[in-house]
Image 1 (spheres, rainbow, N blue to C red):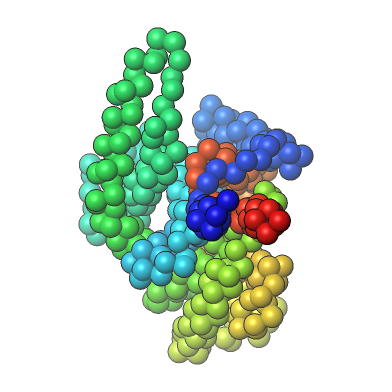
Image 2: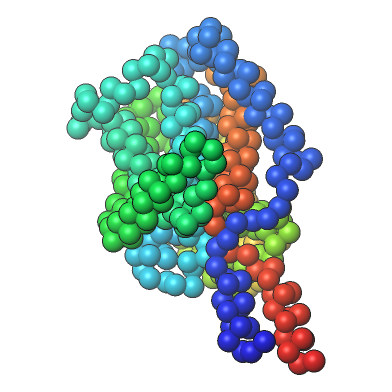
Length: 421
C-alpha cells in the first residue's frame, strides 16, 4: 500500500455517506409510540372536526399548532438557508460538511410545517386556494406562497443526494427490471441538469427564507391591541428575521452533535466551533434591537411586576438570549462539544419560547371570557410531529449520503501502522 492509497482513504473519510447503523433502538421505539399517539389524535381531528381535539374557538382561532408547529417550526428550520448562504453563496468550502444535514433538517422541518398548517385549517380541503386566489396585500398570503415555493426549492436541492445514492445502482427485480434502463436514464439526466442550474435554486432559497421569516412577524403586528405591549412592536418583522438567523447555526450545531452521539460518530468540532463563534455577534445584534425597541416604546414598565407575561419575557430573554450569548463568546465553550450543545439548546429554547409568547402568551382577544390552554390532543399531535420528524431524519441519513463521517480515522491509523510494519 502506497501514499496514494492512504490519501484516498483520508479523502473518502471526509465525504458524505450513508450511516451504517441499526434503525430500531429503545429511544426509537419510544419515538414510534409518540408518533402513533399523535396519529390517533390526528385521525380524530379529521374524522370528528378540529373542535373535538383542540381548545380553539372563535376568540382563539390559532393556538399550539400555529405557535409551535408553524411559527417555531419555520424559525428552527432556518439552518437550511443560513448554511446554504455560508457554504454556497459565500463559498466557504470548509462548511460544506454541514450543508447537507442542514438541508435535510430544513426540508423535513418545512414539510411538517406544511402538515401543521393543513391540520390547523378548519376547512383543510381549501388549502389550495392561495395558489389560484392571489392577494398581494395579505401578509399571510406572502407567508403561504413563499413557504410553498421554498419547500419546492428544498426538494429540488435534495435531488443531487437522490441521484448520487441510486445512480448506477438501479436493480429492480422480476418484471419491473424492464424499467431499470429508463430509471437510470432519468437519474443521469436529472443529475446532469440539476448541477447546471442549482445555483439558481440556492439563491432563491435564501431570498425566499428572508421574506417569509419576517412576514410571520407582520402577522402579529396586524393583531394590534390584542397583543401584549412587551411583544407588540412595528419592528416585529425585523426581530423575527434576526431571531431566525440567530437560531440557524445553533440548530445546525444541535442537530450535528445529536446525530453524532446517536450514531457514535466523532463530532466535527473544527467546523462546529467556527459556527459557534458567529452566533454570539448575531445574538448581540438581536439583543440590541430588542432592548432599543423597549426603551423607545418604554415598555419596560410592564416588567416591574412579576405577572405571567413578565415572567415569560424574562425567561425568553435571560435563558434564550443573554446566557447563550455569554456562552458563545467564551472560547472554552466553543472547544467543548457538551457546552456547545448546551448553548445551542438554549438558543433553540429561546426562539421556541419567543414564538410561543408572540402567538399564544401575548395574544389576548378583548372579548374572550376564558384563556386558551392547549388540549391533550393538541400536545399529542405536536409531540407526534416532532417524533416523526426525528424518525424520518434517522431513516434519511441511513438511506442517502448526508452525514460526513469521521470514524474512518481509526482505519487510517491501522493502515498507516501496516505500512510502517
